[in-house]
Length: 240
Image 1 (cartoon, helix red, strand yellow):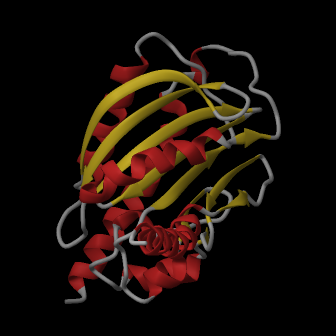
Image 2 (cartoon, rainbow, N blue to C red; image 1 turned 180 degrees about the vertical axis):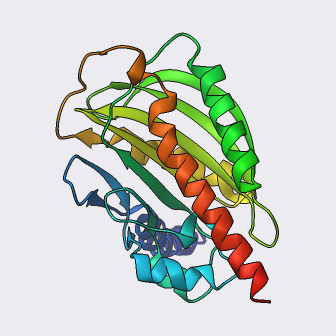
């Protein structure tokens, strides 16, 4: 009967597709070196070392965020071996850790836009923020600022689109920036949010202490990163 061969063919096709799809969605735990947070990330991702970041700095096709790393402060997590081979088509996570925790004021959206605008003026990058929101994140539902950011660095570095999450974590400020090429962001955003749902902090957030805990405090680290990246960019251009 024709139905049976058709059913067999469909079953065979389904069986051959399932492993590939499942492999794409396999996640593994990532815990930062200070053991202050963990979350599930795609299998095969690992933290980029400072020496590997310097190697990527010599490749003008590498996104700027991948060219600088300092463990326990700012670093990328992703398919490092692919990057070293010159493949930057996939996504990655960029982490910024800072000791001082911040708490939210009502003007958080404008403060965030201003901070990125000032960083862009210092580094030569252009940052466009959309969908800035305050919402609970992770398994513990920690209140955080979440935004979508479009980053355009000076040529020849490629642009990126980011899902930025700024969250307090027991005396620390943790920024998780899920990044990828702009044309891949729509496909990756749901996966980024699934990873974010698994986020867990080792220590609960502290109560607000005052004005020193405003949103701009942790972004000082980001400004320093931008300045160093800008210096690296000028150094790379000068060697040509």
